[in-house]
Length: 266
Image (cartoon, rainbow, N blue to C red; front, side, top):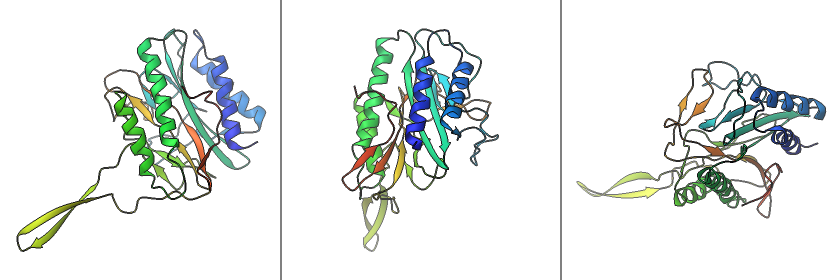
């Protein structure tokens, strides 16, 4: 089983169980059981990047509503109208898979349905740019422009990434447009003109790259705030957030979406 198929199956097992009254800790157990049945282990549990004060303590990320990223599952029963954030990483046969999504619990408001719909579309706007030879900033430019047209902002702290033998390797994929750099040019003594260029050293996609694209949309907050647990990041204004994530391979003709946990493009 490929890492993408594995993480997709784990996510499906969690989505199938998620409902009003179900505890987040029981969803974590469901994910762990599915990983064991598939011969995989969590890539999240014990993961410790440089910025984290402690290793991540859980097998996947689970949280609700105002969560932007990296929620640690807690003793919480899902309520009608919640938006459930699910982000999962696995290791199988030495290779990593990483994907996620946000799902509605019970009946959600029209406003929340709209957020879900356009967050999903924003992901696919980014995916559509993927092909050999493009700079990674083109992905973020498409995502941010689409989100802005729909009235949302994209988180500018957390990036997509390359993936392979480790969860985060190689490329960083911004989900927003990178501003041009200003260059001051002296045209004659004491007189200058200014040129604006895309920042130098922006990576270019090549055939065979495997990347994770995971834009996080909020209403107004592009930064978020971190909880005292050192991991969970939520919106500063308490409003809801939404994200979707796919693994994507760069092919000679363009791209192939490897994960299959998101049912449809709406």
